[in-house]
Length: 213
Image (cartoon, rainbow, N blue to C red; front, side):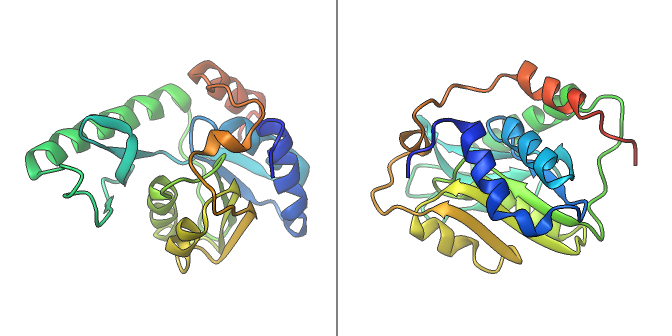
């Protein structure tokens, strides 16, 4: 399945999530690519949106390859191949520090004037534009599970089968529109897949005029 762009993928995801319409779900996007998608889904489901901040931990000399991830609390998910990829303890200490600082900066940038939306007791749907290793989604689901949502849902347009297996048990429900075996990168399943800027993220969050909790 090839999606025209992120907005087209978001509309298809909203259809697949239609049983949550009018149940005031909280749609949480993993920045940056998923934020415009979450806005569309929140509008179609009559829900609310915000961001969940997690960062991938990058392999040495290959920043596009995730060897793990970290959430806003500092909890770390590390893949079993991280050491084979060259990530010794000194490297990990430095990489964790870099990514935690990025998370702090993004929190101040994206939601400077309000507290986080509280997911406790809510239907929470975590959105990304696609998963490769699944590392950031695993960190996001872990962070949110601790906040005791009523239901925790992972929703993505595309992910390879082995990544979906890693997610089993980490969410109450997983919605994935396509799970091809010939998976190389998320972008191969979009006709148009531009970078989403911080300005676009902030515009999406501002447009929805999120209430203070």
